[in-house]
Image (cartoon, rainbow, N blue to C red; front, side, top):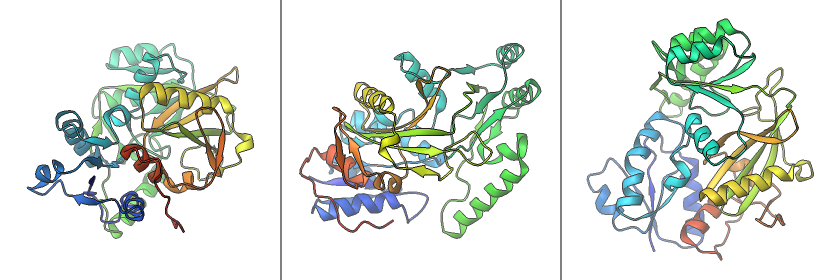
Length: 344
């Protein structure tokens, strides 16, 4: 049994690759890093049994994943993490909404338009405030509260003409202060030897608004891995409606709404997701509804959870690397050993 891990094309310091290697080395499982830039790439791929490619929010990652992973999984028949069930909709809130609504799962009402005339016609009678989102972005990036019809019209006209770059969304339409902070983040990535311009594709010719649900001081993040569920609450940023990226984490399991756990497990099992993180907030009747999903997430926050629930809602105590369960399920090795003395 041999495992391939696709080399990160943006940095040599990919923490996820490090933890996968840690788990594999601890269990003496043969593995190797494979480089997509090598002329021997497909020769190497054909000699492995399982492939790991933990791709992220970079446009370059998305371009590579959507090009290679379907071929590797469907045409070469290699077992992948993530597989296509799990990742084809990653970092695309339009795909996520359509997928969830097609199956009737609770997802916050969203209003998606593919031409300017239809969007402007709807805005003329819409109720504000509304939440505007670009398809991609993590940590509440590209998520804004639109309080007026005039602002909505400006956004619609721009996205259906010049388009909006994720790197320039605040400069163009919202906050120069946030844009300057973003430039600072790009500079730090460049200093660290990483790709500075993480997003370079323009968003054009679609618009996504989401119903605004007030009176939510936090969201409940439920992350499933197989038939396990980890959960914690994330409180909003100061004077803000957004919880993602706030860093205000509460791991107290007694405060977790079990309905969120039940729904996340139900969705993941029925949709054959290897793993998925769900963000739940409450609607007007205090029912939890999902606002976003993501197959990848911060591993240290999962590790800090005091344990997980199984599909029978039995709680299992302990601190676990998500990569440990990813490998366990990918290889179907239930007696996999967990590395000791984990450091982040």
